[in-house]
Image (spheres, rainbow, N blue to C red):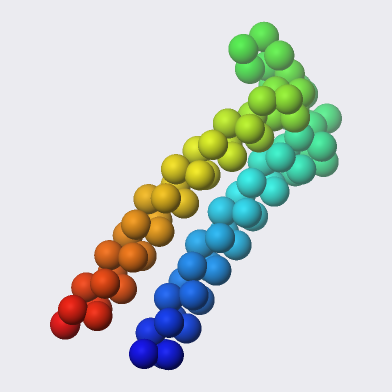
Length: 85
């Protein structure tokens, strides 16, 4: 039982770390670090670096919430099927 729990939490932490990395790159990376480079591209009439800093990272966060729910649902199903067999 303890082994299954540790596998579950390792998989859970891998998902959380991956999604937080994507969010960090989209908010801090695209919004601050690479904004000068991305400002050369226009998106909806605005510079892309500015757009990521103001709205893009929020959209990415909302999408990541739904991705997290979907991935955790798959993980829960996988571990519940493993318990049943």
